[in-house]
Amino acid sequence: MHHLPKLSYEYNALAPIIDETTMIIHHTKHHQTYVDKLNAAVTGTKYESRSVEDLLKNLWEVDENIRMAVRNHWWWHHNHTLFWQMIKPKWSELNWKVLEKINESFENFEAFKNQFTQAALNNFGSGWTRLVANSNQDVTIINTPNQDSPLTIWLKPILWIDLREHAYYLNYQNRRNEYLNNRRTIVNRDFVNELLGA
Ligand code: MN
Image 1 (tube, rainbow, N blue to C red):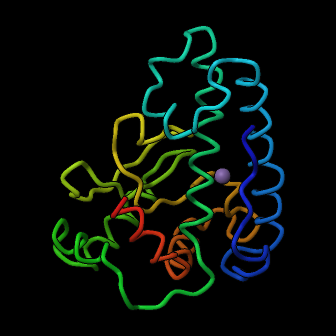
Image 2: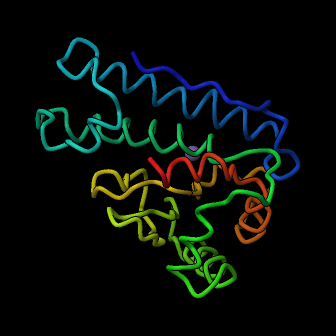
């Protein structure tokens, strides 16, 4: 059985950057729905006991008749499970190893920031903007539509942002840029470092 992951902070801890109502709906309604759908799809099948990460990397193994139906639920669940942990109410400047990688792969942090923001603004419709690493630990920015997962193309998650309107619309409506600027200050740098090292 897959479960809705517990958050390490309260629903109101990110306000006013992400408001309490948005957090409650996003976590207990949207995410829960896809955990339920995932369980409904895999319960009683040979995939029941396998981890989401394992199945995402080996999607071709999944029986064709359920592959398309369940992959979206896996993706949804995995995208959000990491997303919640990439956020932290307060961060410190210390010990950000990913920053070294960013400085190697982009001109400097400012250039990275601008490129990430531009990618997120240009991410048409619903999707995610992501900082990912390849097997050489080089980091790059990609946009993916809907719930597509970078794990299926063997790219390592580092930091990503949900651009579905349910993630920010109550607070920001059409002002995605403002959401991006504010969102930047609640990155869980310890977790992001952990992902890079994984
Ligand atoms: Mn979402």
